[in-house]
Image (cartoon, rainbow, N blue to C red; front, side, top):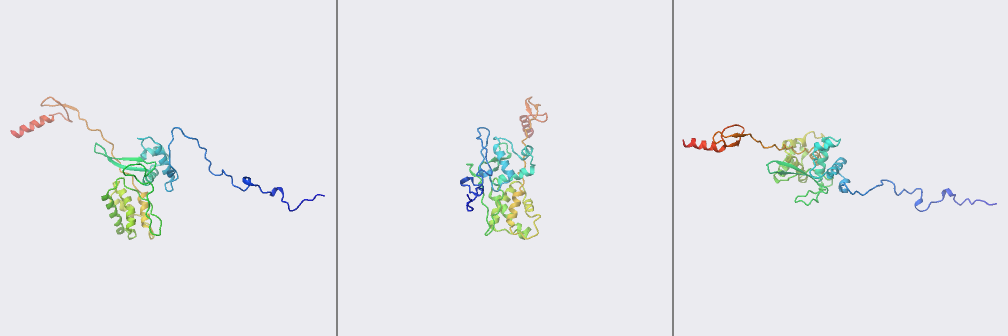
Length: 285
């Protein structure tokens, strides 16, 4: 009579060799890409933006949209708020994030008619624009001895030594408002560009001081510079609006009462030459 060997494992317990092991994770688990190569209407976006460790998701998406726009397209806050469901407040905050990290650059320029306009440039790779004054993409943060680095602060579009000195004096004077706001020289140097960005946007020093010192927490401030850096970034006001250009006044044509020559003036009378001649006659009379 045949008997079973009790030491031989049953078929159910036989090991499965190689990649067919039932406990081995499937090699294609997680994200799977179904990619098709674009040949028209596409925008190249770097992973430094798509996977930016500090930008919010709204700021990343907004930068992608801005980079996809053609040159000359409008992307002011009101236009973006009309295009997307996010309100002006969230869009303005996202634009400030992009400006802080170098993906937007705002410069003020004088135009031939004497006005000052703000020109906004979208940078798809900050720090590699090739211009004379490139803005570095990842700005180094000031690290306190034994502590975390300070948050980044906004930067002025047109840094000027006088503006930076005014910002430094303002920061040094904060200790008179609250003794807890005694800053080191390193902290002051880190925060000064952020204050300069406020002053550059036509915010008075008193208003900047009020924004930095109002409603401070009652408990001791372990990192006052970090709190100020956060306020400088989160509450940064938008650039001052500029009035739209007005067409030059064009007066109607008048006929000169002295020489019958046509000239432009809001009221009838004498042309400029006849007025000059009459004034000379009165002087010699």
